[in-house]
Image 1: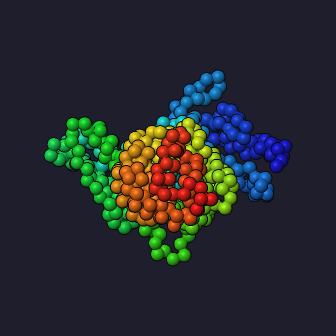
Image 2 (image 1 turned 90 degrees about the vertical axis):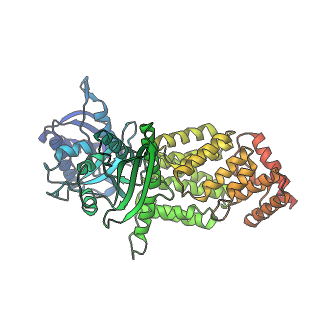
Image 3 (image 1 turned 45 degrees about the vertical axis):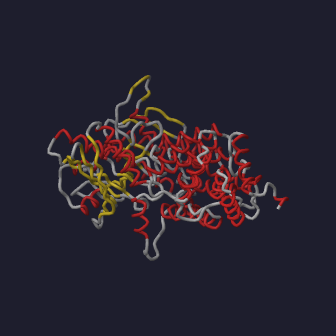
Length: 567
């Protein structure tokens, strides 16, 4: 709005606030980058204290300035090795600080866990544990803490607090009960892998491993550990000898009450212990954190039940929206969108919510629920693009964009976005299931079936839409009997697409009466349904004309009208 005025204000703040504070704490300005600055300190304590004073002075300077003209800084701090070249600094030590700054909230100070290790008990501030974050172009998740300038540390223990707007979980070191010290590494590896993989789910706050390691080999009350770590839920487990191999036990516990929420036992042969560890880790993670039906999500929802006048957070609105959207009908889709809108209002950068808002428009356009389809398609692209722009490290952001490309027959771009989503979170069953549907549409139905079945293994409490996309992939692979049998696993109402799949499958095996019954169900749900409409790219976007014609021929054989004028 005021480029010249902003530049003048920026220069003034650098001169009057930034540079004096850096000099006072023995910092060294490496370079200025537009509205940013890279600073090196010899001491982590000095770096954090400088950042606190800097934000305090910036806040004071903004006090008399209208909100739309205020300059607000984000500060990210990391401790690590750097490469000095030509007066500049390079390396992961710098890159991590830059990435932390990028995800930091305006006006706040976020630090990496290794900075915390060198500053705890040395500065008069407390910290909020924001869990492990997967940062762009950084290989390993980074534990991040927010500096709480208005809170004092607890002298008895590292004072960390966790925002209760998201479920927080701590994975304690798994206990080695084999009596053989060499098996310590197995429990340590499983707990570390579970932490890293849970951190990929952005709707969980995962306590950093450095914080949980303090409890290795100790006996402590669950409630105390929960309070000290600031974690609502705790995962604990053990490694024991079993006949011919090892037994790994894992359980999820509600921290404040100590109530056992879930327990599972895994028996694995010792022939390939590394493969066994990977299998156990994958099962534990997806059981706890699957997008639909995950144990942590179920416990979190139950926490909210019956709470009078509760203040729903963005996450709660998000979960409510998912409950409605997965019912796949026009009314619930509209209700889901209303909840998503409230979540976005509270947290405009919430990638998963923006992604699901995009899907609400994709679904209404594809299923004929929209009075203005062109507007729905445009809104779908708008929110999918916003999801990627505001949270490119969230798998669901890329999943939403993949959905848009798929419906518009841009399959190469769609598959590239699916690949990005899977790279960000290989254990996201929802993305895998929808990728399976896309592969079936692009002439790779066998691979599609494999992806959906893997998604079902990862999320055994999967929603019905998994069943429908598996049936469709089987139909596309000409496995008609299997497609029909799969649809019998549906727990709730079958959608139009599900009945279309059944009608075509029955027609393919020559069961005319069953095919006609399915057509009747289709017309009950969509009185204007025709072969032309339901084999269009907007509804079933097959990649090749041959695939689409095969579907058309079978629906016509089942008795579905070809054009509305014939009805």
